[in-house]
Image (cartoon, rainbow, N blue to C red):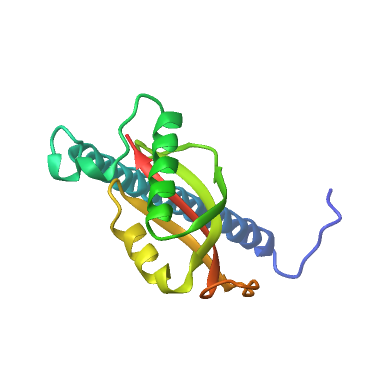
Length: 174
């Protein structure tokens, strides 16, 4: 005999039916959430495949117009050295003096090799615009991620003002 007593003899049956209905509703809700998450992953995968297929269509062999955008060397380190040489030449052409040129760790992203660099130095104030424009139009391409500029104090006997710069930039290789 049970110690449970109620005035309504059907109350325990209704409580069990309500609890069972709640469990079924939770199961349906959980299944709907799992299905939605799977569909989102599938959509992301399809989008990534589209991006990869577009990138693979633009190889230098199939698209010679864009071949000059990439550093083409045997290894990523040689490509990064070529990027350093190009930046040094560009700086010399505009009277910039490079104090620090640091090669960062090479990374592979979407089938491309990213060649990151940090460049610090000074440039005459009058040459700054031309220097930045040359960076923008450089071939192979140079992507400038971050620019920090500040005026330096004029040294005694110095002609013209100098601007100190620090660039975080990268080139691309295949």
